[in-house]
Image (cartoon, rainbow, N blue to C red; front, side):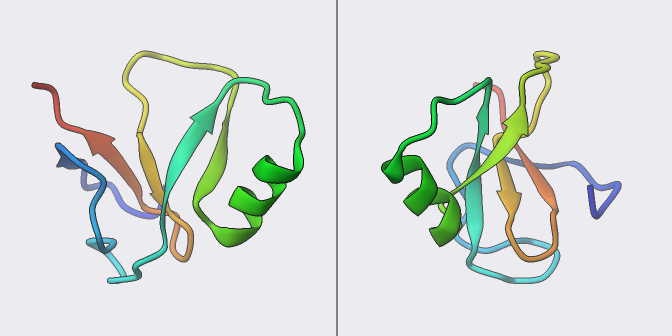
Length: 75
């Protein structure tokens, strides 16, 4: 995690609040089965892998450029 500030959003942010990059990816948790679609999404920076350990208070998005993690604001 690049910052100790907790950023929360209702929807995926357009830009990273730390570095202003537009490369904000959805975090994919679990153990995915490899596919060409998964490879393309990873290569394009649309998703990043988040691992298989889930705490219930995990970030939903991550900046591909600086690593800042972004959380979904509870409803």
